[in-house]
Figure 1 (cartoon, rainbow, N blue to C red):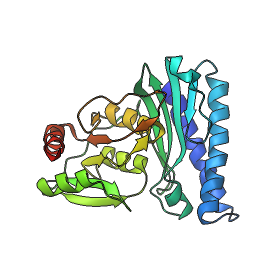
Figure 2: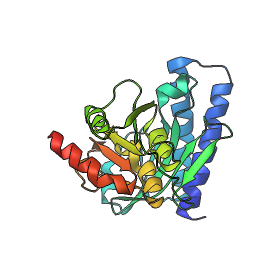
Figure 3: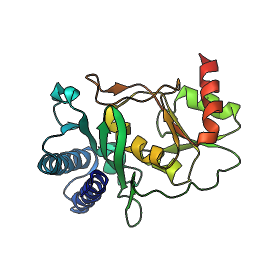
Figure 4: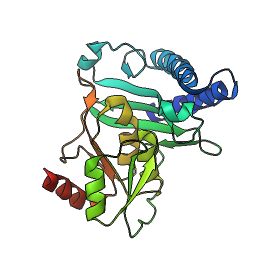
Length: 245
């Protein structure tokens, strides 16, 4: 099984596990989110360690072992990206399974189990991008839209589209449901590694909001910002962000 096949398989199975946890009726709200996180994390971490014992591992729900920083290959996972949305029985949450090689997000799968029938987007199976909308759609947080996104959206005559998890937003650009995901409110490596691998494989622009590359497997896992957008819009978006200072 290739790395990409493994990532997709694990994301899909973890998604099914999460749907079963939610359907059990044993948990609600924050308790459901906590149970889902713990259950999916246990499966993903055990499976990765069994399938790729020589690789490093970074998970949102595991105590970090910084020995991974000396490794070339590190799996970076988020068992439930959008725990709030999952606990609220919404559909805009995701499962991230990414592989950083040499600090770059090279392989990934993002499962969207909350969508009808479940969807898994992967770095090894790409489809052409849909035609862009004439008025660019900007994906933003449901609760705290980034100032930069609001300002750039207004300057480009765009439309703000609130959505839940980072993975759901990134995959909405891949799926042609929006053109731009501009985030400046702070994230961690597990929030974007798998989505960036999938988005880049589909030909989207992926960078920090100053245009610099996104690097993974750092000792400090905090990543302040992210831009995923259609390539023809990247130069304009980055210039407008820079002009904001």
